[in-house]
Each structure stands twice: as C-alpha cells, then as structure tokens.
Length: 533
Image (tube, rainbow, N blue to C red; front, side, top):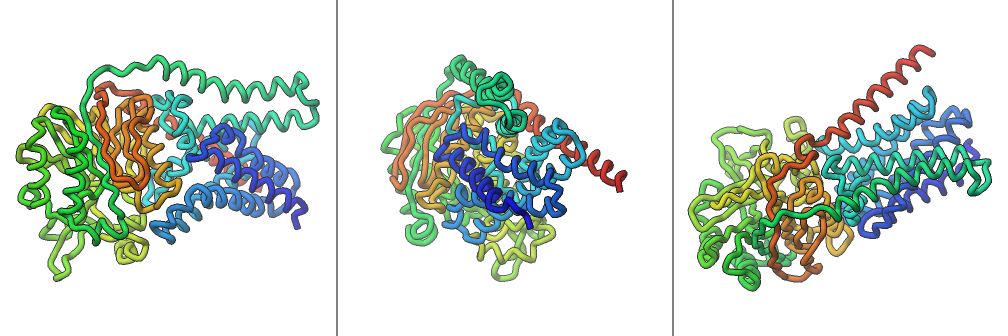
C-alpha cells in the first residue's frame, strides 16, 4: 500500500486549485505557470519509489486533480445537458491523465531532458487531437487561459493558441527542474537564483515581447458601421415555443432601428434568430425573410447577417446525416445556418460545421447513426445536423467579406483561419449562450473570441441571443459589452483588414511539429522497453 496517499491527494487538489484560479473568469493566469508542479512531484516520487503499481497510482492521483479542475471550470454545461457535462469532464480528465501516464512510461527509460520534452509535446498532441475528433471538447486548451490577458499573447498571430500551451508547459517544467536542483540549497543562494531565473526569463520574456507588439500595433483605418443585436429571448421558455417567430423578428428589428445610422452596413443577429425550420429552396418567399428585407429598405447599404434553422431536401440519402420526413418520404438535412440578407434578391448561406457532440450530432455518424435518437435525450432538438466542407465567406455587394462564425466554432483557431484564407475581412460571431444560464460559461465563450481576433488580426462583431454581445478589435480589446439578460443593441465602427497573419497562412504548424516529436520519443521509448524484455 502506498505510504504517501494523503500527501499525493493534497498535491493533486493543489494543482486543481491552481488550474481553476488561472481560468477565466477568475483569470489569475500567472498561477497556471506553477499548476503542473505538484503533479510532476507526484510522478517523480512514484517513479523513484520503485512501487510496482506506480502507473496505476499516478493515473489515480492525476485523474482526481484533472477531474476537479474540469468540473470547477465546466460544471455549467449541466444547465444545457447533464449527460454532456459528465461526458466532457470525464473524457477530458481521462485524456489528461493518460498524458501523465505516458510521461511516466517515457521517464522510466530516458533522461530528464528527453522526458520533459516528451511531456510538453505529448500534452500539446493531446490538445490537438481533442480539436479534431468527433468527441471534440477543446474548451480547456491551456492557451485559452490567457483570453482575458490579451496584452500577454499578441504573438498568437504566429503560433495560435497552442503557443500559449507550450509556454505554460515549458515554464512549469523549468520551475520543476529548478525545484529538483535546489531541494537542498539555501533560499536565495547562488544556485537557487540561477535555476529559478531561467523560469522567470521564459515566463516574462513573451509578456514583454507581447506588450511591445500590443503597443506598436496600429489598425489601418477602414471602418464599417455595424449594429450587434442581443434580443434576450429565453431559449427554454420563449425561443422555440413561447414567442412566435414574428414576435422575435420584430424585437430584433426594433432593437436594430434604435441604434442604426443611415450608413450602417451590417445588422448582426444571433444564432437561430429565425428559429423555425425554413426550407432553403423557399428562402426568398419566406415571410420572415421578406419582413427582414423590408426593414433593410431604409438602410441603403444595409445587410443582415443572422442565424436560422434551415433544411435542404434530397431525393435520396445523399449524406450520412440525411433523414426521412415524418411521413416516411426521403430525405432532408437540417442545418444550423448563417444567412446574409441584402436589399436585393439573393441570399447567401453558410452551414455550421463544428457541431457539439451529443447535442447537434452523433459522433462519427457514418458508424453510429443508429444512436441518433439519443441526441434528443442529450439535449438536442434535431438529431445530427448537416455540415459543409468549405468555410463560406459572405460577401456584400460592396465587396466586404464576412466570416459567419456560429457559436461553438469560435473556439477553434485553425478552423476560423479558413474563412480568412477565403477572403474574410472581418468576423461576425453569432451565438446563443443562454442555454448555460448566468454562469462562467458565457463569459468564457465571449473571452475566447478575443484569441481569434489576435490570431487572424480581424475585428469581430459578436451577437449573442443573451450573454455578451460586443465588438473586439484586432488586438483583442473588447468594447461596448452588453450585460447579461438584457435586451440591447450596440452600434460601432470596426476596421476591416485584408492582411494575412503567419498563423492564418500556416495554421497549427507548431503543434503538429510537437506532436511528431512526441510520437518519435514514445516509439523510441517503446523500442527500448522491448529490447530490455
């Protein structure tokens, strides 16, 4: 039986506490640079104790720590889906603990430098994987923690959010190595100062560089006048049953009119602002679209970007998400859609394609399509929604390209860069954060949008059904924030931009490289183990 059980439990809890305090909305993010150290100490003591069940114990203590952290930062998912919250927390905790287990395996067979490099790269590889599989939930990516400290991370325009993850992991490792080398040294002795100075340099240097970038970055003046609308329609009691479509539309029109200028170019309305399923073949003749276009008639340059629930009919099961109508006839796909409505005929369409697992889609629908009815039990309303392969940019008659980023999509950095590559000069985020209630969830979601502004150097207009509607400039600064549970509209000018950042051009090159390094080190360690058997 392990003798340091209580000590290791305490260390795990300390790590969880440091992670939680670092995360938005508390955002004492400096603590994140020390949060892994208690867990690394646990791994070291188990590895050197010669305990034959050290891997099992390490997984147990790591899981406790990561479970508490994920629960503290993600409990609010329960408001929308209890099962979804449980799965997200358990899955994240398990994946993070497996990284610690892999690090333990590698460290038993390699020196400290190679093992530390593996730990950093393996964690980043886990985060990358969590961005791309169908059970994706990258909310807890380490680089997200600095969303409310945009002055610290202006260099995300080169590395994306994974650069922040590397920064956190590398500083933790260096401070941990300093701890090991100075265990028996006097406080503030020469060796003590030397070892910890390395960590301080790596911690502070990126902040200094970022502040220099922040203060020197000047947006090119290229303004567009925009109205963002927050109608504050309760998603549980009003949006899909309590208020008629026409009542919801009139609320958005009234709010838009209250702040619009004669030269306003965009009215940004939230996700599923038009909530009743509309056939895409009949969009032009839909009464809501006609009324929205009538509203636009007094704004010569006006365009509406809005969310809508739409569907497209097929003569056969053309996609893995296609389903039959209630009368048994084939077939249709339902979509969470972004629309661009202009004064002239013609409506541009984008279908949300990063879907929430278990709510908007069954993961791997080609294999698990038979489980589709369960999405209703998990909180969804449509089963598996349809998607599209390309990121559609919505273009106005004047040539302005807008990225219509819908809700959850705004958490994915490289995904958003595809809009920019396709010509987007600004980003419109449309979302419905009311599902989570007055919790940290909607704050975190709004804060993560600031990362996309820095990575792409695109200004953002954010319209939430409720939560936080605002404008974000190309440095990640927020202006004209709305309050929670208040019907409101804001008018602002944001600058368009056509320049392509390094991150937009090359995407997640940094984390792909790190993942390759992790794989090579793990295979090398596996070969060493086989040779020793």
